[in-house]
Image (cartoon, rainbow, N blue to C red):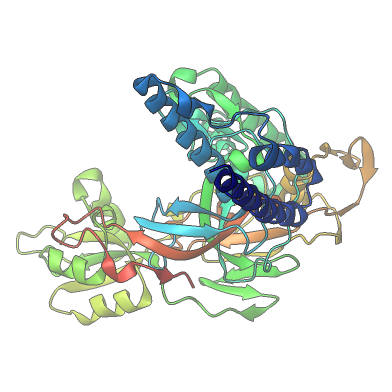
Length: 502
């Protein structure tokens, strides 16, 4: 019997040493990959767990009270799951749901994606103490899901590649550094400007003013709007600062990479003067007038237009004048303007509707008055959504000559993303108190746009995406749910299961 016990103990020790060796080897490989040797402090704990057993890791299993033992078993499982999820979400992949139609028809609302962190290299935690389940707010308790201290500098582990032109990319919303909680998905800077403009309308012949005078107007306008927001927490909510990795996650297509000169002409993207191929799923907004009847649901379903996008315009809201200006003059049998829809359409969808002469009278692209203010807001320009730029995308290590004209384009990069104090004075540009006419960028930047070009809040509205905001690359759709349909009528989009993201 004693010999048998000795054999069992010897086998157990051998098993423990083998387990310890495998676990420790994998852990050391992980530390080598992330280049963080502070993790060596945990090796003695691994040694004790598998070999010496000074700490009674599973002592709760010996508790006689079954209820307490049951509770502690769940605590043990939950703690392990949270720690495992933290490391998986940080270094390998995370789940992401498409919340809006900005990438239709490439990505659909209700698509659930696996976002690879290793494609571009995992970003080391900048706010290391946070819950892996939520981005920034705990929904029930309405408080931050992270601790702002400790705070680590940006660093990225080597991955399989870099962001390439036309990649679909998940990133933290750059203009989400400060948010009014009740308007969390709205760019606070644009919101402040728009409120301020209602108080200080743009002066007559504003474009004839010198750049310094224009700059003073924009500063005054923004400050006035921000003061209103700060003094109205019941309307806008408290204004909070969010660290880079705790800002809202966005997903767009990268259409411009560092060093590119990007321009949009008639909706076509040009890089360094050469036109880029337009993705098949790109959509624009159109006003669609029928011959007098309403568009049947069967047509909407065939075109895969969601109910949120089925917008029937009403002449009761004063649209009749606008319709006439757009040439939508068709009258129905009751001498009333025929129904007009506002719809996002791809070129293929547009051709399908135009071919249906019995149903459709006329289709007109949405005019630019619908676009709102474009980036940079504090710059006099004649750019619009379909005709934008040219604009040079900053590249790490490259130096530009700063002028009063291009300063609005790059001031946010210099101030907000690279941490310098910037001021335009009458006698020139000052960076950190020193007069400068050149600046060398410390980060790479990207230009992101949605494929749903007229329904996408993207770089045309808030500017560049710094490299430290890049989260990862969507790899595959693992689930897709259509909220417009019932469970027995196509709610689950089986045809999108395990669809690779191009």
